[in-house]
Amino acid sequence: MNTARRYLGNGVVQAFLVIVGLLWMTPLAGLLLSSMRSAEDTAKGGWWTVFTSPGQLSFDNYSALLENAGMTRAFWNTVLISVPATFLVVVLAALAGYAFAWLDFPGRDAVFLLVVALLVVPVQIGLLPVAKLFGQIGLFGTIPGVVLFHVAYGLPFAVFLLRNYFAEIPKEMLEAARMDGGTEWRIFTRLVLPVGRPAIASLAIFQFLWVWNDMLVALLFADSSAQPLTVELQSQIRQFGSNIDVLAPGAFLSLIVPVAVFFAFQRHFVQGVMAGSVK
Image (cartoon, rainbow, N blue to C red):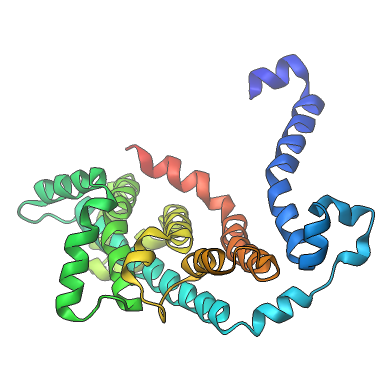
């Protein structure tokens, strides 16, 4: 980027980045405009026709969406799956990351090596065995079952990321805290967590986006009363096909939440990932 600025100038580079940003936002804008058009208007032409006929836009589709029991239930199911799965992964990974980085216990390096090895295990390998296990213990088809699956498969990467980040904290800081009488819990909550905030924020973004946008796990583990938005939208497409007045606002609602979360925490995203990727 610095080389490009040197040869082209800041103005050209900034204009290029603006164009790239606009192109990236075009599908989102198109989906928003489509979600505010009636099925008849959609059948007549593309979403860009609203610029010549702005009277097409209305919030009737969103009013109908709120009255659609399946879509509203799926939205709250998505929230009930994504928020606990993100919270549990962040909390457990932070505790495990601190233990692997600064606590001495038998087999620490071997256990951490096993955690790192789990990073290469594809999600698809565990679908059928875990589904069978959940069926035996009564969790198959439920929201807690989907949450537990996401937590289990999100932890290896989360522990790896936070352990590497916490390991970069100067040892002298922790030793000084211990000399002042600080317990391990107090050091963890008052020193390590505030220092590790960028990595924790980036981890929360990763986990939330993955769980919110997931369809494979939910398609297998969630029944009709527990399925999230991704599965409900796929079901609406299969059943009705041309039900665009419900599908478009539902798809936009499913898209805008992770986009808003990403932009809200983007300041920490690159900083946390880069700092935790290498020691």
